Image 1 (tube, helix red, strand yellow):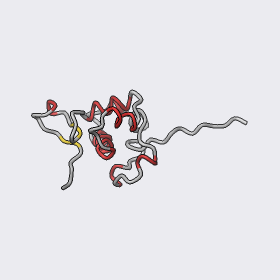
Image 2 (tube, helix red, strand yellow; image 1 turned 45 degrees about the vertical axis):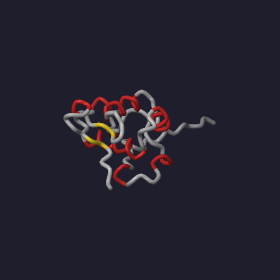
Image 3 (cartoon, one colour; image 1 turned 90 degrees about the vertical axis):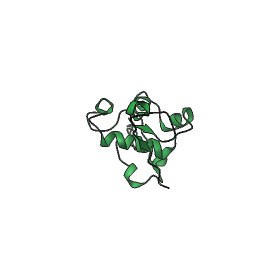
Length: 112
């Protein structure tokens, strides 16, 4: 069975796209991320979610950018911490999107 990780039903959550197996909408996940929640904290606070489902929600937002415009940086990446390379390991290729799911940590310069 293939799971559709982001679902939309006019009779559920007022038609707002939501994550399979949860009562969290894509917008709520984006709000958590933009408020500094990383993947570990999201999954700890919402154990009903799965790593793949959260990645699917972030990808859904990127594919529907006009609906979620407030959650994007000027460079096109999503606000807040995304997955590290290690957290994204094993995700299907369609969910390994730089700037959307995977967000690199800014490099720090050593002054010497």
